[in-house]
Length: 96
Image (cartoon, rainbow, N blue to C red; front, side):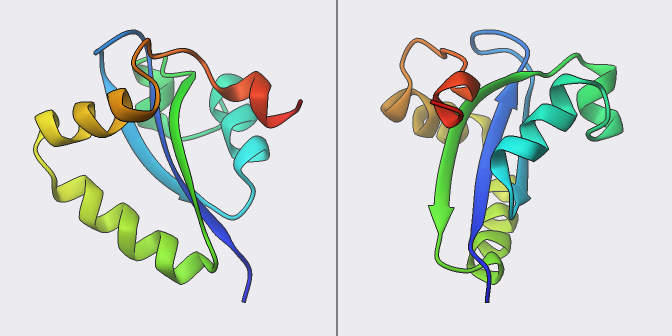
């Protein structure tokens, strides 16, 4: 089974956030950045990758994504800020 990633993208520091799952993180974030991702991300101009985690298989990533979507906003913000306190865009690091 193929690996997967759970990711969070935002429009700005502590702004609107979106949690997603994918097998190809760089390609999926590129889709969001060019407006070909989800309608929600396009509507709110979400294009900053602020959090990502890898999983050994896509089914584990899907389970994690569904759980995270049920969290309250404070938990989501804390998760982001533990890894990325300044909410920097991590997209360029994917391609480095």
